[in-house]
Length: 312
Image 1 (tube, rainbow, N blue to C red):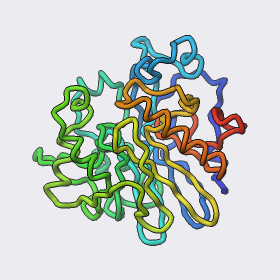
Image 2 (tube, rainbow, N blue to C red):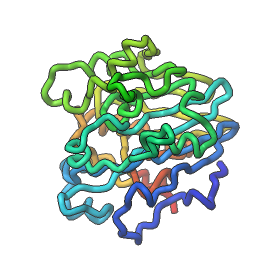
Image 3 (cartoon, rainbow, N blue to C red):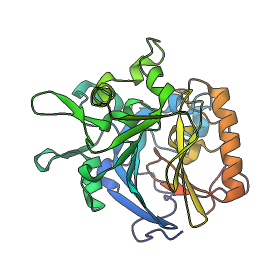
């Protein structure tokens, strides 16, 4: 593993209590994993309620790990991955996108503005270009699940108000039951799934649906990691004997590494607990690099022997 250390420290500075903003994050953090070139793309920030993010963990414990704003919200990255794989360019998750209104942005504290005049409605498109590519170059989009902060950038609304896939040259990959679940009328889940992020991909027949654990292309394998949603996926990258895992919402930040530190948003928290146990035990045994989607300060790290913190 040889990260670009000038741009990407292996850990954030735990002494820095400055509340981050999207502009303080580098657009791209590159690293090499064997023969794979991986780019962590900073697609912006959102702010979610700290109590919801840490579930049953008391606030005096979790607030030591992260600052809160005056609405009790904590800053969360919208980190996506762009992987230069041997058989194509793969984007993993897409952030919030640009289609939500001002009220939605205010509630969730979304900061992801790009440069619309340059054809980049959000920071995701800016980051893809910073990495040396155009959105049209992407061959595969993997969506770990279809919540708005992971699938929002999968589609776009044009100047006429019409919805289209944001990556028309790509196939979109997710769990086939996650797609079905996203249309559930259940009041507990439906606010997290927005039809505008999903229906255009169906209309253009761009889905490649999987059953669970499956290799998408050499070096990129999906792992079924249920709990947050029943059909949530994480992504394992493997090359040259090295492994990295994009955890998505199985473990959204480094602060969520202890097994019982589970989001209140998780639909099946006891399932999350056992999934984390299985995945983190393997990560420790095989020395995986763990990549966090929502941690604004810690993009990645390796487990310490205690299995609940990162090595320094």
